[in-house]
Amino acid sequence: MKFIHYLETITGVGIYPLTSLLIFFLFFSALSIWAFRADKTYIDAMKQIPFNGNENENNGHNKTA
Image 1: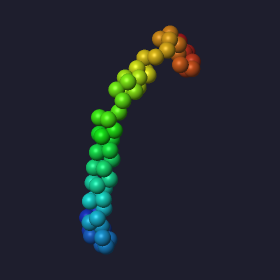
Image 2: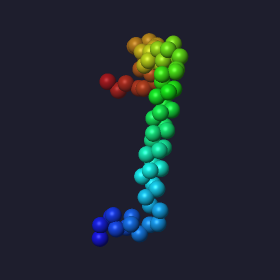
Image 3: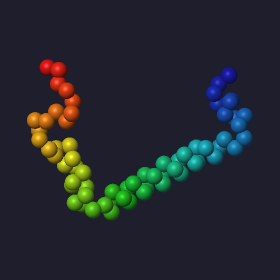
Image 4: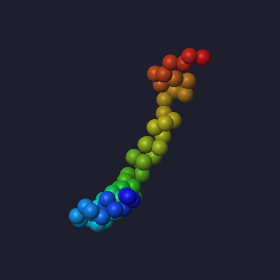
């Protein structure tokens, strides 16, 4: 028996794809609006996080070699 036959036996299963699409669309829209409205200095500060600090530090990781 194929998987689709199991889904057909569930009542109201057709609402799940629509609900998941709606959740994705709302999340993507909210994130896009936040990204366009965010303070540019905050975005620039976040972009520089991986490069801040001393380049010779091992960030708490022990080097074995």
